[in-house]
Length: 128
Image (cartoon, rainbow, N blue to C red; front, top):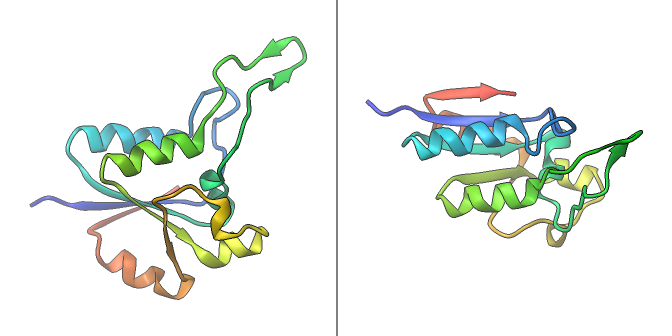
């Protein structure tokens, strides 16, 4: 039996300083490429991943420059193109002063109150 996996991402910008991507988003790309049925729920600070126009180029720590900065909106866009549903909690978006027009296309907005129903559709839930 194929298990459906929901990746719940709440801790934002995990490892994006030393890496060029978020480890969970990268992992989701990898397991989807291997045939896994997976979806992503962005909540809390991780809703910022979907904000258009982010540009971390030029970031440096002292003399050390990050030559491969993260492109989280691009990573999510590519995930959506692979057929992965990416949900975003509307109240968390609003709490950060963001409007729906600030977000990339293809994200599926949901109310916090329907998150339990969403989770019920999956056999595995991985909270990050």
